[in-house]
Amino acid sequence: MQTEDSKNDRNTEIENEIEVMKSELEFLIGSEVPKNCKSIVNNIQLILKYMLGDDATKKERINLLPHFVVDGMKCSLVFNFNDLKNIEISYKPTPRHNNYIYKSKEDMSWNLYQNVDKILDCINSARNILLFPKKRSINELQNQKNMKIFPLVPNDLVFSFYVQGFKLLLAIYTIKGNETTKHILECSSIGWLNNVIILLTTCLQILQQLKDKLAIFEPISYENN
Image 1: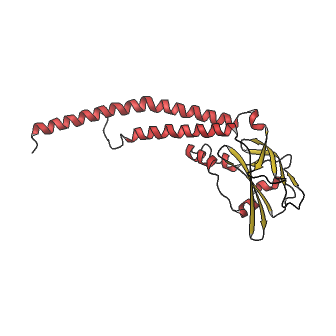
Image 2: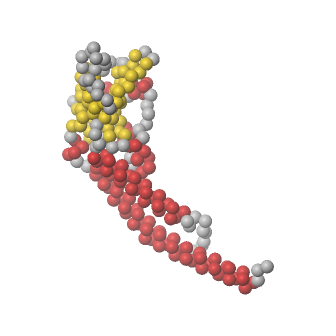
Image 3: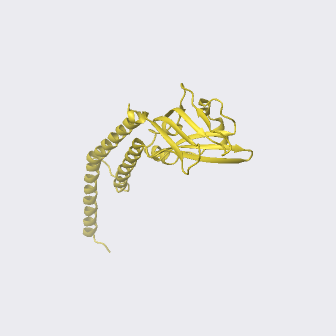
């Protein structure tokens, strides 16, 4: 059975521990939180520079090619953050056919909805949007506004551009009754996209480390005198 003195000693020990943790929490909030927030802001500013800045490298024409060699199938375009312009798609339905060339209208561009919708809404969502593009049904792809930038594309042919990781990809769907054939074309690594993903990952790591540190103090409640 505890004596009154031992109870008092234990209470004093607990109070001392709380005071130490209060000091550590105050240091964390006063020093580490501002420092980490500054790092995140700096990273986001760099991300915006890569994605929205007048960077000539994002206005170069890039080429997309199939995973496996397919005669006559290729695509070239100008990739500028959320817009794809001056698109030219070369497509050969079967070896017996001639190449069909589909060019986008001069005054129109293909909009990559996956970038602009949520890129600043949440860092985690922004990163996932680039790494794991949303899957769309054939019906959604057929009815998307982006297809209107290509004149004279038959109803049984559908295009879908999307970003995955640090690459831009083009899916070409050929629809024959209930059967759908899919071809994938991709470009080589796009440097600024790779940099954006690295910066987003760094922001997530900083936030997770800060969250873990703050979680230590969650069970503690105290009143400021």
